[in-house]
Image (tube, rainbow, N blue to C red; front, top):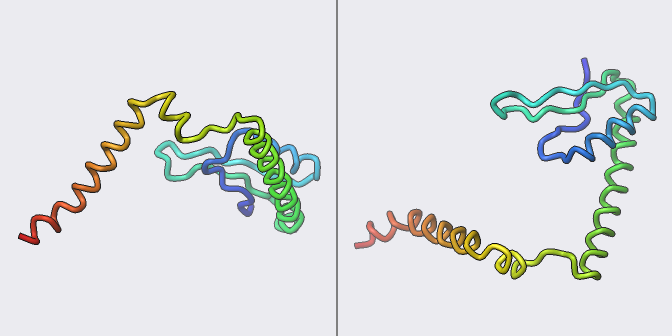
Amino acid sequence: MGRLLLNLRMVPEDESREVREMLDAAGIGFYETAPSRWGISHGGIWVTDEADMAKAKALMADYQRERQRRARAEHEAAVREGRDERFMDVVRGDPLRVLLTAAAIVALLLLVALPAILLRN
């Protein structure tokens, strides 16, 4: 029976592809399960042989460190070059969406606070 190496919940396609390529290159047998129809399970990448699990976890840890380093470098470059998106950029780009979202948040907070307000009197 296989052991789960990577839960595919919120994993971008490029990351899952790179993990599959890494496992192939290392000669580690694996299989992938698809997401369930109703969203209960998001699928995963499973190592087939228990003996390969330690090696797969070590490779995965190295891969994640490298991916984190790359993501931070890309973010820092975007900040330096002024390409990163800030809140005011979102407000300028789609003010109606920001206004409706803020109104929905206020309405939900009032709805949650309503019982306390009504019980106080």
